[in-house]
Amino acid sequence: MPTFYVSDLDGTLLNSTATLSGYTRQTLNRLLASGLPFTIATSRSVSSVGPIFQGVSLPFPVIELNGAYITDLSTGEHLFVNSIATNLAADLLTVVQAHDIKPLISCHNGQEDQVYFTTDVNAGIQWYIDDAERNEDGRWHCRPDLTAIFDDQVMRFTLIDTQVRLTALAQVLRSRFPNCLDMHLFENPYQPDWYWLTLQDAQATKANGIRELQMLRGLQNHDLTVFGDHNNDISMFQLADVAVATANATPELRQHATEIIGHHSEDSVVKYLETRWSMVNV
Image 1 (cartoon, one colour):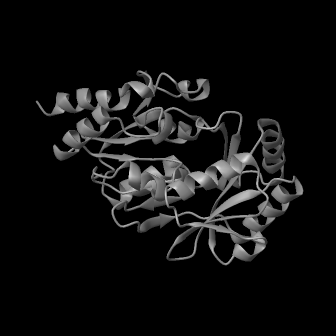
Image 2 (tube, one colour; image 1 turned 90 degrees about the vertical axis):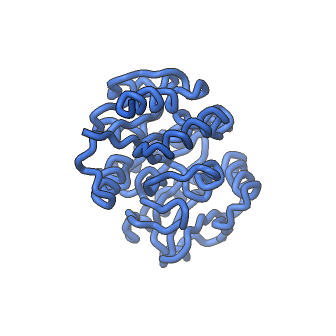
């Protein structure tokens, strides 16, 4: 039976500078040209994925925002959208602001993606805004009143603050909105000591994104091999036939892995792909 391969990006396929190494880029292009069935499932948006994969033609749409979207990377068209219900989004904003935390809210207006933020943000949020400006990401808009954005489909809340404050908020949200949200708390690997808490619809997971993509592209008859390093990869590890964790993976993810490979900075994913693909293309 053929195998469909899906990889996370940060901490998995990408190196420590959040790029594809020269070796990974060259090898991946060669494997794709020979027919490798491969795509990515990432917490990133296509606005940041596009520049990373410039010069690499993925054969399938990508799963972005942890499964909130399935998107054609070449056109930017969303083939699948899983948003947060408007009433729930409004309630989330009320609770988040009551905890004196300023959110970034990712939205889709039916034609374009937007990211809204408010004034007087902390250094963790400002780092993200500055990074978007460096990459000429035109989605970002400052809005003093975030309640005015709910005509759009709300895809994600991104909260950036200290671990203590976000952990306390996550506990409140789990109690207040049971089974409504897919939440992930993690340290920004590119800005230590600043933590991110992402909030999405409970169905917006990498596993559900993979299922939808398999149906869209007739891949149900393929085995599934996935690669990851963090807890937001657990859902797709539970779905996969083979779940491959990098050496830098979290202890929680390792519990769901069927194999452990080398560190993400060692081109370990593409080396694994090269070995497995050569076995079926002798």
